[in-house]
Length: 407
DNA sequence: TCTGGGGTCCTAGGACCC
DNA sequence: TCTGGGGTCCTAGGACCC
Image (cartoon, rainbow, N blue to C red; front, side, top):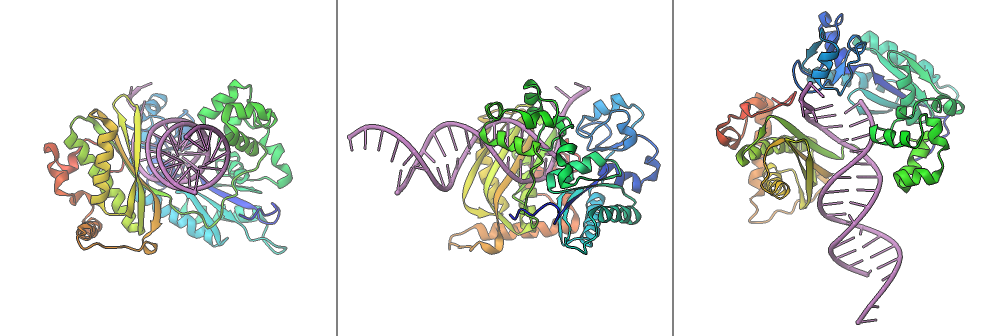
């Protein structure tokens, strides 16, 4: 982790404006003139709202019911995630023509480390070119922030939104940062902001001046020091090749709360199957399995276990998940969400498989692969394990299901 | 107004070993 | 025989981000 002087290698942050909503209305121009959001017409939450809807106070994360109340004339549109992925890929390709060090931080955000040196193009000029090319080629707008590190680049992009560019020089960081409200600081969420307000902190400058004792008392030694560093504009020195994925997870909120063990197991298998096939597609094995449940009253709990051997075999994961699930709920039902996550991943190629003579695993492994290929060819809706279609008399494709994109 | 899905990272306590 | 400290792993839960 080399700490480069800011002037040598500025960091540029590209953040697509209202990404899902923008892609959707680009593909459906009739929607561009009306307040619109992505996230379903009746239920669930708003994933992304266009700027017309934002004028009414509609924001990402709020329930669709709340959005509809704020903006009764607004149009809710289901997401087209294939289209978003494609647009994201195109953005990445454009960015890679400007720097070899590009890291997508999410589907709609990227960091670039710019080439440095006496003949390098000034960062602001690069940012302006990126914005122009993205708009010309994709008909999408983005905002660009430039700063001496990731934290400042990202916050500069936030300040530039929408459709703008902002550059913060190394010697302008404090002047930029300290007047901002403390909740604008990346890393300060609702919980930390509430605590800070109670300490009388309203701006990032206030936070920077807060006595270390008070910070430590409120947040603990480590997190306290971390907050202080952020407030002084230090942060986000992550490596550019990136750590890759640290886990694969899937969760499903069902349309009607699960009332029988059979239904619970059917959903669990469904979620596990998706995780397993994604792991195999990524050629990773996982060693730790976490199961999380959310109950009808919105309380939730999770538990996890470490496997003796890393695996990507659906059947093995499912057996462990079932046991964890039983331990976790202790007979309780009325479950609205089932989640599974596999972490401590390693590349398949680096794991030496030690087959045993009595190993049934090989057969399951082959079955997984056949299943993956069938799904690729025919689509997920057509291919389900027999257990799923028989469970509790509920057809697999008709399991109670609240999710947005599950097919 | 009843509240999604996909992630990452951190903390803290207990077990266990040296 | 008793005590202490440090390191590492495991597990549960929380905060945060998009």
